[in-house]
Length: 292
Image (cartoon, rainbow, N blue to C red):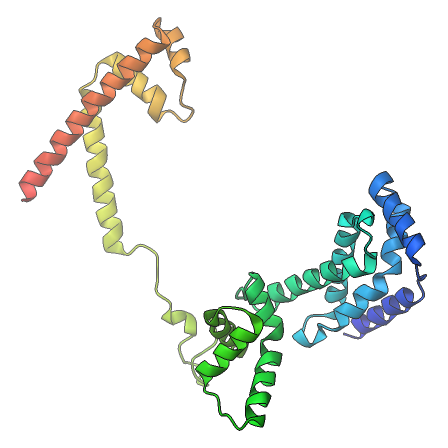
């Protein structure tokens, strides 16, 4: 932690010592990077506005992310801004970069705030970063008017204030109100207590299911063997090479080997499948009749 703090202060000092760009110089650097891919111009532009990235990163420290990581994400957002900036639009680079820096930091915070994905839509992002503030504001205004809000009314007013669906408000409040726990934690203080993972349903196949599956596969295999036995040698060869081989062969290659046209091989294959289908249907109907 001490090393991280030292790194933060060192980087901040370097950023504060960087040059301040006037509008004309900033424009020249932006053109040099966009039109000539001048890396020296890009480096100068990024360095000049790194203080802006660090300032914005510091506003997200309350979410518990390491400052080093926040600054790194802010720097990535700054570089994306420089890469996409169009100097012909007449907007200052700093104004344009703010959006990219903020978006990069917010995405990082939401990815790492919890092991469970918190959300990725615009309404979910708005709720993640503004829910507590807007809730407190709504509750203060209600108290000032002498109004007592129940939870549903509070959710409705927050949803209206932020312009998001009420179910997103309810979902985000639940996510922010909880925390991550290990599935290997015990359910009680007793060391011999069951772990939470013991309550999860085992989704692997049970012994009875495995036996049934093996029996079904054996039955199907027997039906296929019987159906193949009803084919001529040439038909069996084409079916094996076309459907059962690890690398299925083309109609053209089989035709060359058998001395047949491509169309003729296709006709033989279709006839073979027709015979097999009738055989399988007959065997299946016999089983159903026996079980009925």
